[in-house]
Image 1 (cartoon, rainbow, N blue to C red):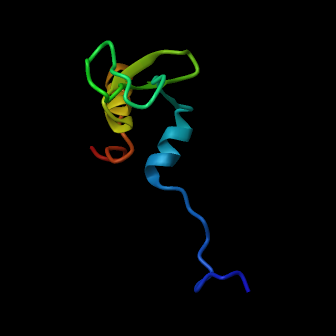
Image 2: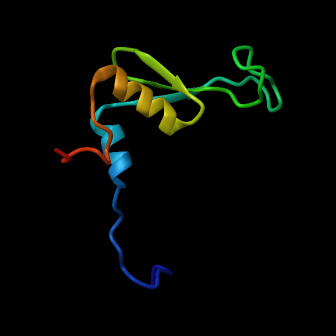
Length: 84
């Protein structure tokens, strides 16, 4: 017995599939907890989404970074695909 109540196959979310399709990675630079970001003066460090061409686009969150990357590339986000 596996400990699971129901046998449900593992599925990736539409967001994760979209990230993998575009081969995106994330990077958040922070040296220690409590460090202030030199760009913003805040403890919230920007997140950068980058692709295999090493083009970086930043935002306060992963979703903001994804939106900035998609806008710069002219790519629809995962929830916009299939919309006319």
